[in-house]
Amino acid sequence: MVGYMTELVLTNRNVLCIGGGQVAWRKLSGLRQSGARLTVLAPELHPDLAAWVAQGGLQHRAEWFHEAVLDEAPRPHLLFAATSDQVLNRQIGAWATERGLWCNSADDPASSGFLVPAVVRRGEVTVAVSTGGLSPALARLLKERLERWLEPGWGDLAQLFGNWRQRVKETISDAATRQQFWRQTCLAVEEEERYQESENSTWLAERLRQASGQSKR
Image (tube, rainbow, N blue to C red; front, side, top):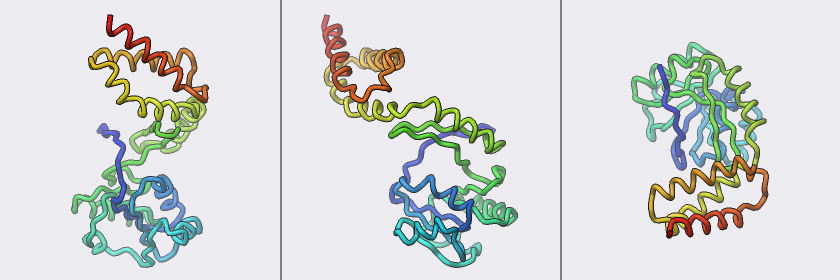
């Protein structure tokens, strides 16, 4: 089986985590900046989760899980089965599948509807690595290698290029020529190590000026 890697937009979407321990904290910590409506269902919480609840970033239902929770409205867009009981996690995953719910069952990719990759972020740049659930330890090692390779400046470049997309489109009307401009600009970033520069607006403006002159010949 080959999974389909994607990036979900979860703003104002309901996410439910069943379990309140270290595993639940690890699962939910990656969603802190997602804008999702996060709820954790567990009689007790890990101290970090409790602090998060106190800050207002997480809703807490202090109760034990029962199957009927999965039928309550509003239904969660994502579900995490993150209890300390692996048998229960698998059962939650099976119940979720029956109901068409996307569920990640802790340490059991076979009963999961989706897997959570190891992620490296640099601003708006996100690089994810997955082993298909075969080896979280190996995914973590590869993430650490990516963190050493991916310099912080790539996030600033992504933001700059995004801000200039419309201006470039207006300046270079031909789609193929515009695609070539961006390709050559990205190659120049690598060659000139522009990701190490704190200011690239002037550099990009000059490249666009030159490209505009060439496209009018």
